Structure formats: C-alpha cells, structure tokens
Length: 310
Image 1 (cartoon, one colour):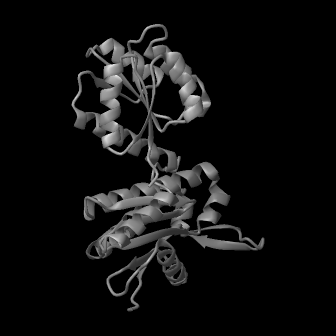
Image 2 (spheres, one colour):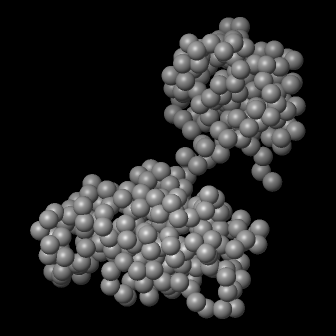
Image 3 (tube, rainbow, N blue to C red):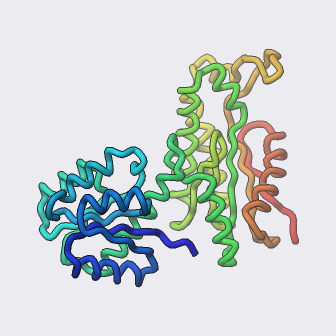
C-alpha cells in the first residue's frame, strides 16, 4: 500500500528521532533535514505529502523556510505543520499568516502528533479533489466511498442527482446565474442529507449539474422527498417573476429550434444493494444511467428507485 511521505525539518537529533519513530509506527514514510536550507532542497527532491517544520533553528528559521516554500507555486497544496517549544500567540499568528496549516507545541503527545498529521492530510486530500464551486468531494472520492461500502458489506443507497432544463437556463440567464443554480443544488442536498440522513452519509459533486448522495436504504425516501420539495421552492428565486408566472423560458435547443423550457427541476436516480449484490462503482453508475433515462422522461422533479432483484 502507498505510504504518505512526511518531511521533518528539525535541528535537534533527539527530537527528529522521536518524531520519526512515532510516524513510522503510524505507517508513514519519513525523510529528515536538520537545517532550513536542507529542508528546502528535500522538499524539491522528495516531494513530501506533508512537512513538519521546527520554528527555532540556527541560520534559516522555520518562518523563513515556510515563506520560501509558500512562495513556490508547486508547493501550494503541500501542508506545513509548525513545531514550537513555546505556546506563543505571536509565533502562531506569524506562521499561520505565512501559510502554515497547523501548530504543534513541544513536548507533544504521540497520539496528538499522529492525529494532527492524519487529519491535516485528510483535509488537504479533500480540498485537492473538491469541486471549487460547491466545495463537495469529487469523482475519485465518490468512487472510493462506494467501493469501500461494497468491500465492508454495508447496506447502502446511492442517490444520483441531475438537473433538467439547466442548459436552457444557462443560455438565457448566463453562466454566473448558472453557477448560483449549481450552488443552490449543493446546498439543498446538504441540508436534506444532514437533516434526514445519517451521520456518516456522503455528499459529492461529480461535475456540472451531476451530484451524488450516499446514504442507507431506509433514509432514501425521506431524503429524496425533501430534496425535491426544497429544490422546487428555492429554484424559483433564481428566475424573474415573469418567467415564474409563465412557468417556462423561451430559447433555442441544441438543434437551433426555438422552444419553451420549463423551470429547472431535479431528477434523482436511486441505486441500492437491498435486493441485489453490487460489486463496483462502475456497476452502480451503469444502473443509475438507466434509471436517469426513466426519470428524465417524466415531467418535473422526481426520484426513481431501482426495483430489480438479483
């Protein structure tokens, strides 16, 4: 299994060994540097997933190293955790202003060190794959989440959400308004899932106007019903009054023909392993694509569940 690589930039041999032993025990790959200058070179050579950086070092101190690393765009997403022997508020603020992601006070608890490293890496990974508009996790994490639930033999349900008449809305109201529709959709899914779902439910954004909620089969109906109810109310706020009263907008379709397009609605396709075994995210997506055709053949916001067995 691929190990995350941690670079320790620390001038004290004892502290370097202590941190290295703790991180190796937690199954991280560890590389070290004893000066700021060496640390900067190691970042370029080793390309670590995270840097633990001591504040107080002879020569180039941690603040200088942090600034140099953050000034290099190639290190933009690499997390930096500062190590300091004093709980000095000014030191913390200076490091955070220079781009550090977290602080650990020495002496530290081994479990705290591992937890902070692990949580920082998780957060950075989430941000790396997150959709920039909605902040929701993207395709890679969606696939991983589905495959993990399959591997653990958990009962689960995947709700695929897709907007109807969205292109026509974009054409008439413009891309900035289209972005507001996407953000609205994300907010509706988040609110419904957080209110009516489980604590461990997953919400993702595949891209464009395609979304995913992963929950349990017993929560599907209440989540879908509330997504539809909330979406149908809130979407009208993003239309002018005349279009809402009329119930449609007029624009050309993909073939250039002038047509009436109803108010944007949401189609939800639900795939579960209640009645049949699911073996991969690919199979789940294929079933959802079939259900999506059925949902889009209906008018307005709807949800369609997979009823097939075996």
